[in-house]
Image (cartoon, rainbow, N blue to C red):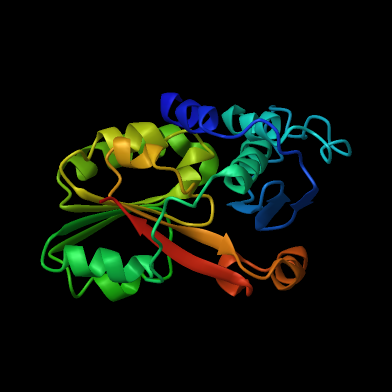
Length: 240
């Protein structure tokens, strides 16, 4: 998890957690700013403990300490940690463009081999436009199986679109290592706006920024999936 640890090391240490919302599909955390992440849990039938450490005492914690939960092998803790991490990232150095990730993938992938790791609503639009479309979609707790399935496909990719949820099950770094020659997009609400990603071969970071916290929290707290949430801006930063 070198990639994730490098990102954590860039985060400021002083901000503290002001608010936490762990909801059905998404998690929102307020510290320096608002951060989002998809909300994943281990299967209820599993033997792994799935509760969150210090639940009920998270507000007031050092935000970077909570961001380190992203390293946990418990999916809910790792999801919470990514939201905390995203609440701390400094985006002042980015020039954002309001362009949808599907547009980026299509513009770079038309007539080429495209691999998508994750489940996204725009996939049906790509199939008629690209040469080959290979989709790897697994449950979050099936990370190792997903790696095995994706490895050979990513090596053949001209364009790779990788879900930011791969940070939650700790497969992001390995997935990126299999497609060094591809144009690579990291996307989804869990994706951190960190320049460290560019160092690891990501060409476009397509994530989420909370523009209207009150509105966004109303949707998140009422069980909205990410694509339903209002008050959130889908933004993209490109490697220069």
